[in-house]
Each structure stands twice: as structure tokens, then as C-alpha cells.
Image 1: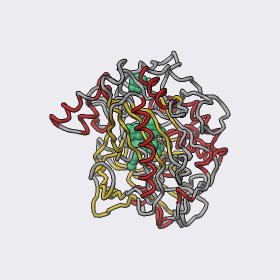
Image 2 (image 1 turned 60 degrees about the horizontal axis):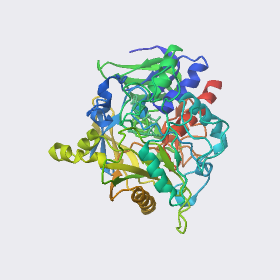
Image 3 (image 1 turned 60 degrees about the vertical axis):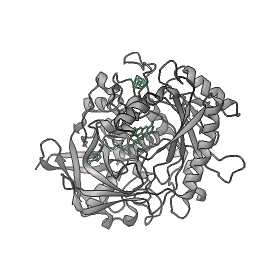
Image 4 (image 1 turned 30 degrees about the vertical axis):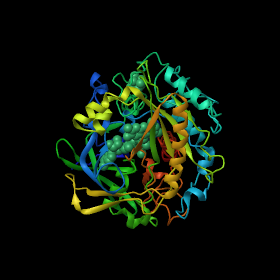
Length: 510
Ligand SMILES: Cc1cc2nc3c(=O)[nH]c(=O)nc-3n(C[C@H](O)[C@H](O)[C@H](O)COP(=O)(O)OP(=O)(O)OC[C@H]3O[C@@H](n4cnc5c(N)ncnc54)[C@H](O)[C@@H]3O)c2cc1C
Ligand code: SF4
């Protein structure tokens, strides 16, 4: 058994873990980070047919999650690598809007969800996160953008021809498309710049031009003293007298089991794995809001409307995930919705992705047609529902001894109606841009999972206080996407990052 003691242990190297560690290491603390995945090697194969995340070893099936309802598979793996899914993500880096933090019964219903903070509390940390990740964007062009204290660190890249065409198609309806904020390097001459390859979302960047956490944050923290232990699966948090005194882990490669001790423990294993670990450790019994741990799982309600064009949609064969349309974020004229969602450009899918979705000869045949496609992703806000949850089944254990996580998820009628309205708009834009017809692909993964260990003011309705401290345990914080009371209708990573910088700053001052 390892006995070394740290100032803090951070579990998980994704957005929540990396940004909290950033503050603690900068404050001079001795920090150990446990990460169940490994570094993703960068070779030309990152962009190959097998490069999409679910086809790589970083879709980790060693702790299989059982899906009772919802999802795209009956058994799911976890996205595990140094930097978490940021290595494979789309890089879209939005701030939530001011009204996303305010009470809205249309979304929250009787769920008791409420944000204990406001946009203005997070604003400085959004700015800091954008700087750390060197986000590129079009300052002032987003019609629903909240106030910002600084412009984007980088301007956007020029639009591809197909993006210009889609922009014109949207403008025909009086909409105001603008360029997506992206975590991609266009301006730092000291590093590889983006070469606009046609694979990005779901692929690791072979030349590290994507500004993911394994490029922008973790190597610098290691230089400054962070101890990163890879292939280390946290299996239990051991509590005595209202404090976590040790974190047990299993080494994935050697099978060795050991524990580490620290004054503080920061749990950031993601919105699926964090509630699993809390429940497996029996910590629900210590928390007055213990009965909601694992509950209120949200994941957005998403679909891609692919326009099918008469000829190659993107003749330049280049990256074109570039546009956002947020005119209907706060509802659709004439409808009862006061909150709807966002549309974001989705590029022509890679052949590898299609072959992954449709295995065998059929997939190979269908994938020949993908150059005719380009799309718009519709993201609608989903409602927090008590019945949508991660539970554990202690009768089924994985190789590390963790009880199996079991997921149940159903969309509400409102979720589905909101999505339908947004996809209707996307179809019109695609047609106006030259598409002959459409194909709607529903996204059923849990890639935007949030909400399972939420923060709040009411101690019986939320497991975390306003600084993400786990009620009932003085030295435990949960900072991954599970802290969110509602999901908003925008990609979650920048909000998780900003909140983790806020919480990390507070922990460092204690
Ligand atoms: C393909 C894809 C594309 C995406 N694109 C975007 C996008 O464009 N914009 C956006 O905002 N969001 C995007 N997302 C979502 C975004 O990546 C997540 O919201 C975000 O990474 C969640 O951050 P987190 O801190 O909650 O946890 P994660 O980033 O998931 O980090 C959790 C980490 O904990 C580790 N871990 C899990 N269990 C254990 C354990 N027991 N012990 C030790 N370590 C453990 C995991 O390996 C992982 O590294 C995308 C996701 C995917 C999968
Ligand atoms: S589009 Fe740019 S950042 Fe994305 S994978 Fe290709 S080169 Fe890398």
C-alpha cells in the first residue's frame, strides 16, 4: 500500500479536473492526479479510418456501463485518456447565456433545479478559460452572447466555400449566423497550426493543433509539479469523521491496488463515473441530498440534419464546422417555447464514422455517398428529470471491483418537441443552401452528460453547495459536468472549465 500524502488528489484529467488542478498547482500545492486512461499518441493514424474515438482503445470497455433505457448501445464504454474526451472533442467553446443561470420553470418543472450562482459570478473565469485554451471566435457577432470582459484570444479562420453557402442560406430567413468559438490553433506560430483537415470532431488531432487539455494544460502543470498517474482507476473514497482520508485505486496495467492520502479530494471523473464512485463508496448516506446522487442525468437532445446535395457538398474537402445560429435560443416566434436551443454546422462525416455506424459491406457502400452531405447539428435543452439516472448494481462488479453503473434515460415530451422545432429550421436552411433532401441522424450517445451530482441551495435537493463541496464531507469537491443543475442548450466544456477555475481558486485559498 502506498502511503504518500498530498495536499490534494484530483480524480480525472478532463475539464473539471485539469482546470481545478491548474489553480491548485499554481498556488504551490502538491497535487496528485489519478487518470484511468493513458496519453493518446499522435501519429497520422489519428486521422485514419479507425481514428474516431469509439473505435480506439480510448473508448474504455473495462468498466462497462449497462443502459436500461436510452443511449445507442446496451453496454457502453467510458471515454478515458489523459485530457479526457477533450482530445477527441469538437472544440466548440460556448459560454452559457445569462438567462441559463436564472430560474425557468418551463425547463426545470418540479425538479427543484436551481443555479446557486449567476453568469456574472462565472464571467471572469470564462475569460480565463478562453485564454488558457486560446479560443478562436468572432467577438460581438453572437446575437445572444452575454457580456464579456475581454474579446476572444484569437479571431476565427476564414470560412470554407460550403460554410459561406450555408451562411447565405440562413441569412435568407433573416437569421444571423456567426462563427463558432473553437479550441483550435490558428495564430500561435510556436505550435502547429490547423491545416483544416476534414476530420476533427471525434478524432484526436495528429498534429496537436486542437487546443485540448493534453496539449494546452496538463504538460505545463506537470512541469510545474503536478504528479499525474495514468492507468489509475479510482475505486473507492474512504471516509471517516466527515472527511475523505484516502482514495483507493487499481492500476489498469499491473493490477496493483493501493491508496493515496491527501488533505483534499477533488472528484472529476465525469457525469457518469463520478456518481458511480460516490455511490460505490456509500457516501450518499453522509449527504442530506444523498437521494439525488445519480439523478437528473441530462445529455441534451441532439440531432444532425444532413442535407443531401446533388454533387459533392464540400468541394474543397476541408474542415467546415464553422457556423452557429442562435437566433432561436430563446424560443421560436409564435410558439410557446421561451427556450429552445442552438444550431451548429456539422461537416461532411468521415467514411470511418459511417462505417462505424453501419458495419459490414453496407457501411462501405453507403460511405461512398458521404461527400454529398453536409449538415447542421440541433442542440435543444433537455429537462432535468428525477427518473433519468445512473444507479449502481452491486451484484455486478468490473475487474477493478467497481459495482456496475446502470443508466436509465428517457426524453420528456417537451425535449422532443423542442428538437423537432429546431430540426425543422435546419431543414429549411439546408434546402435553401442547395440540398435536394435531408437525412436526420439522432445522437444517442451520452457525450454531453451532465447533472448527476448537482449543486444547489436546498441541501435535500442537491448534493453540492455553491462551491461544489460535497455536503456532509468537508474535504470533498465534485467539479466535472455532474455539478450542473440544468444543461442549457450549448456545449458544456467551457462552463465546466470556468466553474472548475472558480472552485479551484477557492480551494487554493482555504
Ligand atoms: C466526441 C465528443 C465530442 C465533443 N465535443 C464537444 C464540443 O465540441 N464542445 C463541448 O463543449 N463539449 C464537447 N463534448 C463534451 C465534453 O467533452 C464533455 O462535456 C467534457 O469533457 C466533460 O468534462 P468533465 O470534466 O465532466 O469530464 P471528462 O472530460 O469526461 O473527464 C473525466 C475524466 O475522468 C477519467 N475517469 C473516469 N473514471 C475514473 C476513475 N474511476 N478513476 C480515474 N479517472 C477516471 C476519465 O478517463 C476522464 O479522463 C464532446 C464529447 C465527445 C465524446
Ligand atoms: S481540423 Fe485542424 S485542429 Fe481539427 S484535427 Fe484537423 S488539423 Fe487538427
